Image (cartoon, rainbow, N blue to C red):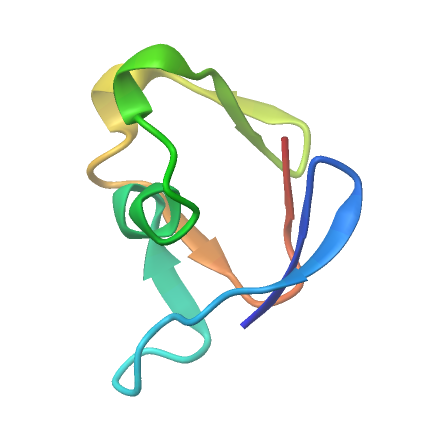
Length: 64
């Protein structure tokens, strides 16, 4: 899956079953980032921590 993470293009392994969509929690795990200590925005929209489990990241999105 191709994403822009903190302003830089990244290729992230989203797994064979969901190459175009991944949960935010799974993305943070793939990036080795502790979800407890970060703030996340997807395409400029800040995601509240309570929504990290349900938020989805799609191919081509920008993550900050």
